[in-house]
Image (cartoon, rainbow, N blue to C red):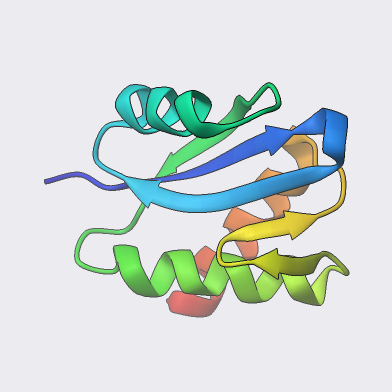
Length: 97
C-alpha cells in the first residue's frame, strides 16, 4: 500500500495540515465536508516504503523548526506554499536516510 504525505491549506484562515493517506481525493473530500472554510491540497509526495509514519512525523517537526506553530493535531498556523512543502519534504528525506 502506498502512503502519501499531503499538505492541505485553509488559506482564508492562515492554516495548513500535514497528514498521510492512501487516497488523497477521499481524504480531501472528507475534510472539506466538515470544514467551514475552503480547503486546497497544494502538494503530495509518496512516503518512503515502510516509513510513512516516521516520515509524516518528521515533516511535522521540520514545519515547526521552520517557524510554523502547531495549533491542533496536524494543523499548523501560517501560510505555506509549494516551495515550503518541497523544502520540508526534502529535509525529511535527508534526515531519514
